Length: 128
Image (cartoon, rainbow, N blue to C red; front, side):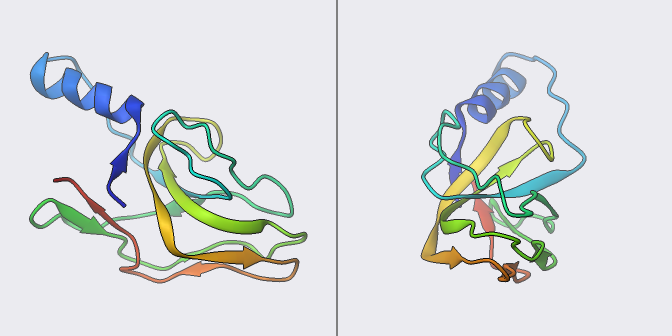
């Protein structure tokens, strides 16, 4: 996952090149998408069937990359979530600002009764 949203690109430029203050979120959340979120956060996030964004934590970066340090387990779907094609990281559990996003290496269809688990180390954010 290496794509940054327009929001994050702008706040980082303002913070590092223009001396403007940016307060980083203390908690970030993993979101599931059935279409590409894009830099402008215009994709389709899963919304029904018991879906909620989940807290995700990252380890200390090395060479401009950091991976999730623990499993992320979504609730059991109470209805179909469709085919998840992308993931995104937000600064809030609902609404908020899109920070990073990327496509899954393989799409995953989530049917009623399924539970999605993202294993520790499966998501890496890289700045290059």
